[in-house]
Image (tube, rainbow, N blue to C red):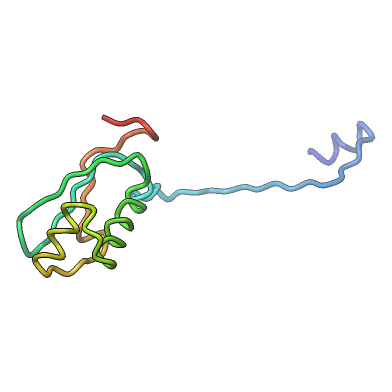
Length: 105
């Protein structure tokens, strides 16, 4: 149909590309931002934080602090002091509230 209209009007197509995407997957919750909770399964202490960046980025920063023993967050300091292992994001991070980009509570 589009090609017939192009021929009818004597148009030339230099480059034509159609991208049809059917993305039926939900966006990953860790690619959003808002309020999060970090916890260790071995103890019952919790750390609650807020970020305007994706949760995955903020988790990576906590992990980097742990890896290089940079006690920049209370959670990292507790994990290092108590000798806890640092696990994957699914085990440690819970999302409390999603926020719109750059909008903080």
